[in-house]
Structures are given as C-alpha cells and as structure tokens.
Image: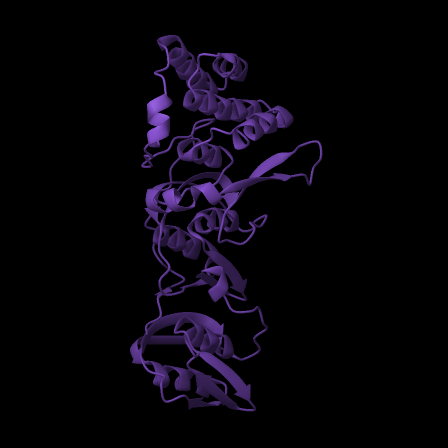
Length: 335
C-alpha cells in the first residue's frame, strides 16, 4: 500500500484567469439530451434565440435592465422550448442578482430548481449560476438526479439558494487568502497544488482520490474554493494544525489534538514499518506491528507534530493503531 502525498510547496499548475462579469458557460462540459427530450424538443425561433443572445450580451455589459427584459420575454413566451425557457430563467436570476435584487434572483433560481422538466443540462447550468463547481461529465451523469438545492436563510431579507451535493459534507463559509480562478475540466490535483501554494499547509491527499472540476471564483477565500472543488466529487477536507487532509468523508479520521514535538519527515519509497518506527522514535515511542503490515511509503511533511505524522502515515495506508503507554500497536483492520 502506498500513500499519495502532495507537498506544501507545489508549483501552481493551473492558469489563473479573470472572471467575466455576469457570464458563465459550461466550458468543456457537454451533456447529451435524453431521448425523451430529443423527441419532444422543438427548435426555438430566431426571435427567441435573438432575445437569448441579447440577454447574455447585456448581462456581460452590465446593462441589467435590458438583459432582464430580453430574458423575461423568453420565460413568458408560451412557444419557448423547455430547455431554452429554463436557461433564460437561470440567466434572469443571474442578471437580477448582479442588479442587486437578491429576492427576485432567488425566485428565478427557485423556479428552475422546482421545474418538473429540469434535466441534467439545466441543473448543471443552475449549479454554476449558484457558484457550484461541476465534476467531470461521467460523474455528473451518475449523480445529477441526487443533486438538490436548499434555501439559505441566515439573512431573511436576502434568501439564497445553495447546492446540496450527495456523498459530501456541508459547505463551510470559508476563510483564507482570497483568489480569482477559472478551472475548465481541470484535474483536482491542480486545485490542490493551488491550495498548497496559497495556504503554505502540508496537503495530504488520500490514495484513490481523483476527479475533475469546472468552476470559476472571483475574489473568494481558498477554503470556499476547495469546498466547491471537492464536494461535487464526493470528497471532503479537514484541517488539523498545519496539515490539510483530503479524502472521502468516511476516510477522514476523527479530529484530535496532537502534542508531539515538531519535525520534518521525508521518506521516499521507504519500507512502511521502518517509516512508522522512525516517526515513533521522534517521540520516544516504539511500535508493535501486526505481522500483516507491509508496503512502501513516500511522504514529506514540513514541521508537523510527530504523532500527527504517525497517524497520517498509518491512516493513508489503511492501518489502525492504539496507544499503550509508549507503545503504538499497529494493526490491519479486518475486511
């Protein structure tokens, strides 16, 4: 078994891009319509397509009143195909939000969220309008029916809609340095590299973690950006001292306090038992190993407490351990 580790000084591999005011696209994200939708969808008229183009352009230019008039005309048009009407309603919510009318924006988004004909493409557009990231198309196809929306009412005069992702933990408010980014179908490793560079934390990614994300963020704290990247992929993160752990929620260890002295540990393709024994030695402890423990490990952690480093190596390799005085008993969990 091997640990996958991403160090605290990764060079940023993603491209930081500007944010287009009012605009959002399903960049790099194409979803096919369902057979039923293809059979019933009618081609929109040129007049309606012209109104959609006008609504997009006026929103990007900051002419929100003009944008809202064009988009409202599509929403109210009885001949508008369902997909076009729902897109117009999403974009109407965006224009209203930028115009400062949060209540009206919520009403538009709520209308989309509860539309009986909302399909995968329409839901993806709403997720992006609400600031959510999108996973790769294969995962989206698997989870989109289970993606739901909730109302955030912490400020009753400004109701907001939030995305509720399956297989994930609730999003946090988010702290840390603010960043403007644009990711299009980017590997999650790019996000983790960015977070490591900005936060200067030791970023530990559990084995098997993978995925892609499409998202934009304008002047947002890195913690919120990380939430928006991992949640669509069924992942979670937690911070313990100067270490950031990223894994499926059920694999994250229970939060605990570490008191051992700080040290820098650096092992490359090292025997797992030898690595754990050397880390324990930093704290004057010895290790009693289950005979089934074996494997190699590659890890570097800067200025972490030795007992935290020990737990990280054990947990990322699927091991359990208990403490009896100065002896750490390491076992392989029963499958």
